[in-house]
Amino acid sequence: MRPSKRDNDQMREVIIERGVAPQAEGSAMISFGNTKVLCTASVETKLPPWLRGKGTGWVTAEYGMLPRSTGSRMRREATAGKQSGRTQEIQRLIGRSLRAVVDMGILGENQITLDCDVITADGGTRTAAITGAYVALSEAINWMLERELISQNPIKDNIAAISCGIYRGTPVLDLDYLEDSEAETDANFIMSGNGNFVEIQGTAEQEPFTRDELNQLMDLAQKGIVELVELQNKVLATKCKVLATK
Image 1: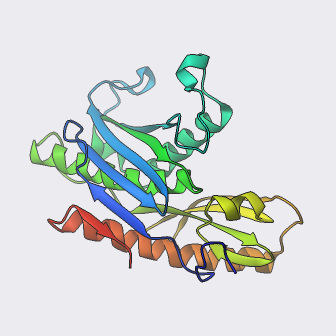
Image 2: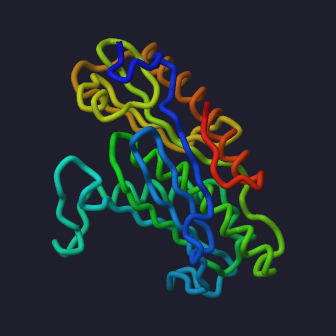
């Protein structure tokens, strides 16, 4: 039995609220159960030096955890004078994931920065950040289209992410913190809306996992991604700004 009493292939409730930061060109608040991440998208014409004058754009990301997003206060990384290796790895992952579904030539000489700030952490912060950042990115693209800063939509497909793992010998979908801290295997899957893989991160925390177990985790991830993509599309297509999985 999972601590949350969910079925093995059942995600936590996922809630997406878009347009939560009115001063940003795009924004979304996403919750995976008790994990909550604020994602904002900022449009700039300033590009990295190595891209200037090439007629192509860039999508990048920054990630951070607020001091009381966890059980005890953590020190702000800014006060330490540097980002942790974990923070750098996650924000690079978010950037890579979003760039995989954006045509940089159509984006033109514009940069979109996604800021993902973890308000509450209960496992799956990186997967929630990627899934929510896609909604914020889509809002920013619509903002650019309305102002004729670009002539067509550069987004080629959805992007979403979900965690899976082997918990007490059983493959399960969408690990919360209690499961993640005990899992024999922990994996994150980033997939496009058409079902292709963008990145897989998998680690055996205890015993090595088998090919059959990996296949089971992939099947669980694909089921979860389908649900997330459906929710993304619904919240972007309707006037209702807040939607949740059933």
